[in-house]
Length: 177
Image 1 (cartoon, rainbow, N blue to C red):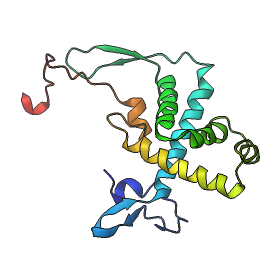
Image 2 (image 1 turned 90 degrees about the vertical axis):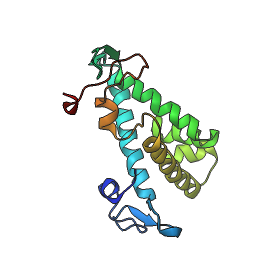
Image 3 (image 1 turned 180 degrees about the vertical axis):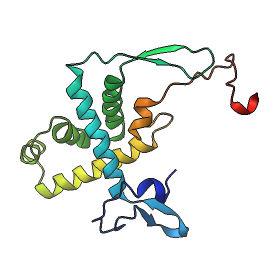
């Protein structure tokens, strides 16, 4: 899943570890994504979460999608609300209670870092260290979540659910004619 072509656009040019390449060598010759890539993924997912929350009060948000199988079923969905719920639930599942409280205060409720430090009884350095670590863990979780990851956002919002039932008809392709 992770190769240079995927991560190069996400990597931070000023990163002291990957220098904008997005990949880091590990023992045994394997290459892994840099943490700056996972923080970028988290920032994009978090920005979309905030957008979904802001639009929730003003829009209806119901969408009708046509399924991709030959039966052509229809699916009604509220993608924005589903995304916001998925973001919160995955975050709660991945983080421990202390880290989730920091995420809730700083990222979701958008409190100032000084307020967070006071409420959580931590120092400024510990706060920012934890905030970066949370962004890295959640960025990885959002990208590697299976079967439906939250990142890339275009696939989450534009993808169509497929029916995979034992009794469903096979999908015809151009090569089957």
